[in-house]
Length: 346
Image 1 (cartoon, rainbow, N blue to C red):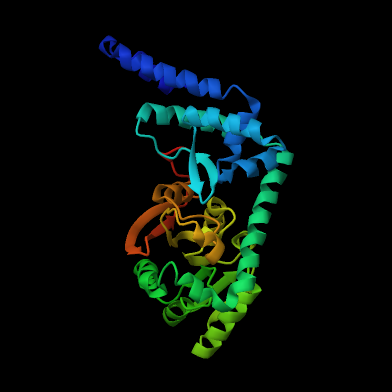
Image 2: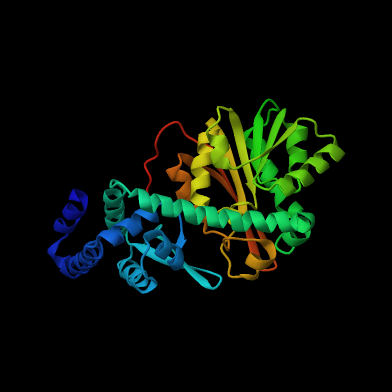
C-alpha cells in the first residue's frame, strides 16, 4: 500500500484533521478485513451480486452471523446494499466520491482477489446461479405465448429497438459481418439484423421462446438466421468468430449478469462490439412476478465496471427516456486486445 501511505505522509501539517479522518477510515477498512469469512465474502462479490440468504447458503452459515459480517464490511465502505424488491442484495462499492478511500478499496480488493477461493464456495456460487437460471427458464416456458404482452408492461419494443440497431449499424456499416443476439425472444429484432447482415445467430435458453422465434423468422422469410438453444457460456467455448453481440432487455433476466460480459468478450473478435439495452435501476418489484425479472434494472456504472473487467470499453451511450416509470439505457462496448487499467475498483 505504498501509494496510500505516501499520500498520507505527504499531506501538509495544516491538514492534520483531514489526515486523521483518512487514517480512521483506513483503520476501519483494515479492521473489517480482519476475518477470513469477510475476505471470502469480498471475493465472492467480485463478479456478482448476492442476497443475504444466498450468501448464507454459499457459506453454509447462519443468517444472523452473515448479516453481522455484511454490516461490518458495509460500514467500512467496502460493499454497498441494494434493494431488489423485498430483498437486500450486496455488491462491492463501485465508485466512491473520496479518491483516497477508493484507492484504499482498490488495494484491498486486489489483495483479496489474489487469494484462491475454496472449491466448496465455488460450488455454492454455481448452485445459486443454477437456481436463478431455473427460475428464469421456468417463467419463460410458462409464458412464451404471452411474452410480448408481458414485456409491453415495461417498454414498447419499438421504443428501444431502433436505437439498439443504430448502435450496431454505426459501428458495423457493411453487411459482411456475423451478429449474434442473446435472448431474441419472439425474434422481432432478428429481422432488421437479417436484412442488413449476411449472418445472424440467435441464442436462447428457452426452447419455447426459440419455437416462437423460428415461426416468426419463417413467416418473414429470414433464411440467413440460425437459432440455437443454449447460453452465452456454452457458445463462448466455441471457435465461432462473432463481430457483434446484442442483448435487448435480457440482462435483468440473467442469473449472473456480470459473468455474461466475460462470456460475450470471449465470443467477440478483437474490435467487435457488444450492445446492451436494459432498464436503469428501479423499485417496481411487481416485474419479478409478472415479467420474470431477476433484477430491478442496473446502475450504468455497474454495467460499465463489469464490461471493463471483461476488456470491453464503453464507446457510446443512449438513454431512450421514461415509460411507466422506467428508463431504458443503451451502451455500446468495444472489445480491446489487451487488459484495461481500470480506474474503478475490481
